[in-house]
Amino acid sequence: MNLRQSMVGLHTWGGLLPSWLLYVIIFAGTVACFDKELNRWMRPALHEGVVSTQGADDVRDWLQRNVSEELHAFWMHGPTAREPYWRLGWEVDGTETFHNVAFDPRGARPDPMPETLGGDFFFKLHYNLHAGDVGMYIVGLAGMFMLVALVSGLIIHRRIFKDFFTLRPKANGQRAWLDAHNLFGVVGFPFHLILAYTGVAIFVASYMPAAAQVNYSGNVMQYFGEVMGSYHREELHQPAAAPRSLDALIAESRRLWDGAEVGWVSVHHPDDASAVVDVRRRDGSRIGTPQDTLTYDATTGELLNRQNASTGYRAYLWLAGLHMAQFGGSLVRLLYLLMGLCGCAMLVGGLQVWLAKREGRGDRSLVWVRALNASVFAGLPLASLALLWGNRLIPATFSERAIAEGWVFVGAWLLMALWAVLERRNARRLLRHQLLLGAVLALGLPLLNGLTADGHLLASLARGDWALASVDLFLIAAGLSCLACARRFSAAPARAVVPGRANRVREA
Image 1 (cartoon, rainbow, N blue to C red):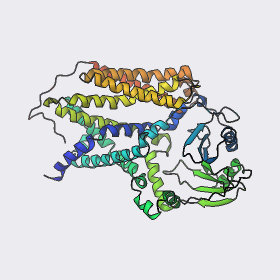
Image 2 (tube, rainbow, N blue to C red; image 1 turned 90 degrees about the vertical axis):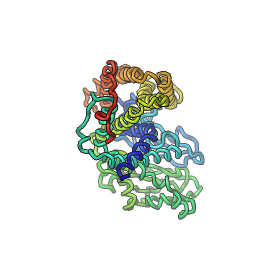
Image 3 (cartoon, one colour; image 1 turned 180 degrees about the vertical axis):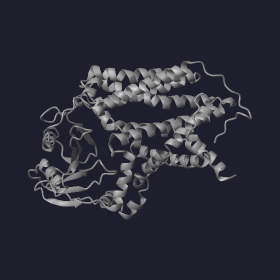
Image 4 (tube, rainbow, N blue to C red; image 1 turned 30 degrees about the vertical axis):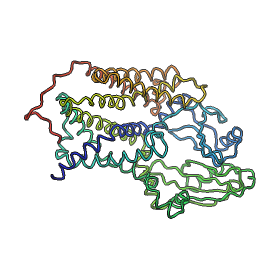
């Protein structure tokens, strides 16, 4: 058995076993490329394009008025082109629980906007499945499987350049799906290889923490502090004096950085005399923002430390920046979106090839595989659309609104899974109905947005707000695509071709 033959089984099972999980990871990561645009769309208060006049001191004043517990730290981020509002988070001392709030930019003083999951929901689903460290390890394992499947797939496909130009959608089912699998796999191969590798690499310290734990006697935070070159000052357990203006420290940081933009501003131990303010630099024009940080005494404003990230940490940040696509503007994010969709199509095509090759064997378990396909491949996008509907229909005054949106997503996905199980023996009819439902949900969202918010599509286009309009435009394109596919599947299926020696489809 030569190398190519030995790779066939590795590619088949290495790609098949985690394929449903990989689809969830890739789909969520693809949507997360435009997480900030989705955050705006899901917050009607941001649809008017108002520029915030609030400052960092205003945000801190709101925190002091509304949070009475002693804080371990709080952090904030000012308005940007993609997120034109102030964000605030804090951790109550001794609880290890985090709170977050976003402020309406239309007022002179900070006023929290209604809760929503926003695009961050898909970002967390992408990297840890909303399951904490366990989910992160599962995603990392799936990424390793993806690397194996990609490399073995490259080895077994001798006609890789020919496959790039081959797509026969009207051929028999197995041949058409194999063409689609090959085409989308070849088109996105460099992208998928790099993203799979960087996705695993940026969490390597979490996957293999033994070295840091042994060398730092279990104090992993000290390890990260030294790698990042960050500054830490022990608590004095004495009352804090009147704090220095955060706006003044931000202005001083811009001066020291020759006008560079400021990102996160954090205050550690704000109620203690040892309080320090970290001001982090932001640069969205490069792959991997440098994360340089200036540390000030929170009371006197004295510059205590000027962090310049080490070469090794900058390399790590470059890998993280390459994976997260927070550089290069909308064009780069659009490219990531298209390549992510290619990855989803590659997985769907590969599983359909596996099913088509086994249809003639009379295996009863195939109906359950088809039900799982329908539950994941169609259920996840439909549940995501249901989440957006929930965002618009749940009242803004509803308590725990973000949690309610999450339950809309989970409930919709469970209903899609139940529907797939009940219709498992009518896969073609199920797919047609799912496509029609997707068209209704996707095309209805821009209309619902126009009825429930001021930033409807025509108003966004009129003022040139393409970031906001792009969400509605994508939903319309997705809805029309679902309609077109449903129309195709409504036609009578072509008569199956009996495989023989002359027309048997080869795997490569």
